[in-house]
Image (cartoon, rainbow, N blue to C red; front, top):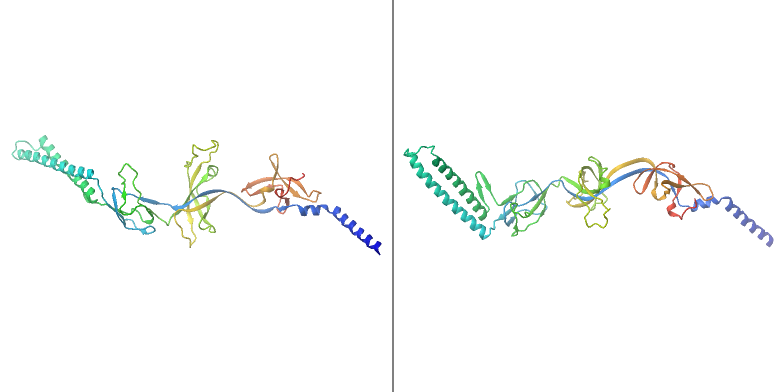
Length: 376
């Protein structure tokens, strides 16, 4: 009985060994990391990083210097063109006020002198001592007109310095600043009592407020010079907003800068590194209902440069190269479980690549990135 049990055990071991040597490729293939070539779509995209901003915005600045007396509206309010925004209270220096008063008094004296001369000549003309076309008489009349105009200008200047209000003909000069366009108030940068610099100053004028039409929003960003060379107006764009990563917005590329506005600084460590940023704009953006859009939202725009649909694709990581020629390891029934197959590649998105020839859909290839150096 014992001999029969030993004989049966030896027979089972021999059969198992024969099966291993008869089907070595089955175990080998089961141990290899395999990937199946599939049909898919490959897109090459340009990525622009930027912000959502109004297409048109206006900075409000004052034409007269002084102190902010009133602020009539707050951030976020909608205003119509012609709506009062600020009241400026003039705050002239003593020297400037004194000069204006002195200039007015001088103009008054010049007008009085010119009128006296004209009156003397007018009597001579009335007595027919001199004709009406007498040169000095004509010049005296012109001097009176000039003196009156100068006096009016000096009076208007003094009124503006003192109160900020004056009149020039039918026009009324005022220290109240009105909205030049209709829009939403994006920011208010001054407070009541704060001094401001006017647009007439040699210094930069104080920015008081920004108005914008929030119904017309665009994307502004920049792309690298490599992508800019392939862009043109009218290309479709997909936009993702940082506050709404799940929402996908669509738009149209409307502007590609002709000149780079973002040159590398001279302090760059590598003189060979020279990747300029080119500004792009995307308009006709469709915003889904329910999204609250604010100026300055960070956004990423993806612009499709090339697209290959319904093509055979594989991950780039499975590629090997013989010199400059790409190859893949195709699974087979050989002892090592695969053989080398040259392939011709097409479009790549950096992760997957199109295979033009050498593979077809359903072919199994070895993922060489998941194993050691193959014995090919």
